Image (tube, rainbow, N blue to C red; front, side):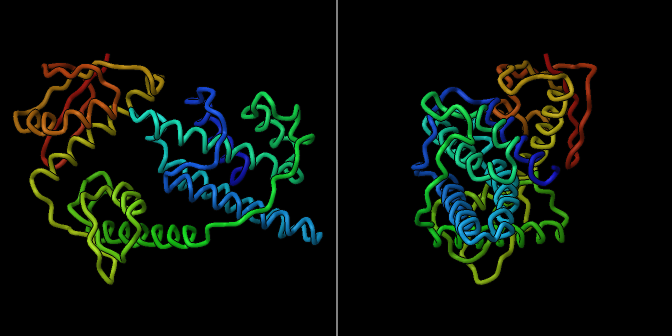
Length: 297
């Protein structure tokens, strides 16, 4: 339940939060979408082969790994796309996730019949069968093996670079100038940069990071700590992602300069339509020698 239904239910909840009727499609040009569709096809092929040979363990065991990839990697890396301002990319993400959940509900129907039906009813389209158990089994097809291998390499680079961050004592919320590693396709470079919170990627034989932090990077890191605290306050107050706020901050002159240098990022991330500086009673957060006191309204 925890590894499969619990995680899958969280994915469905995220989809339902932003669902707008976008039809299910599996032909996105986004590299993350293409990867999860390739993983989905791989799951369908393996599960089909297992059932055809009456090897039920081979038919069902891959489900766990797929749900893990869908939840831990795809959804986390695509979360900002669902609430982003790029309408085209948001549509690609929503249509892909609906396609994945629709096909996944069919694939898990023999082994998880009740949750498969629940999932089907939540994401099925108007012309789909009334029940997942009345719908056709998904068809086998070609898998983009090259992309699957490239994503494995990408995730290994991320893991190694995160270990380098830990050894250097640099938190992930602190931006760094660069990460180094083997050559990757252009689309996957951005995945690495986003995951590592890095500004640039340099091709090198071994994975590593630039540990030198400029004043600008430290300032952004401090503002990101403020962002984390504001997001926590939003959640505590029961605000939904679409709820807009006015953010009021009390800080030093250096803190205000840091905020103003990263104001667009701050307001976009925390959903603040207005930012004010004033003396207030509020929650306090400190980072890299800067102190911020804030309130939201």
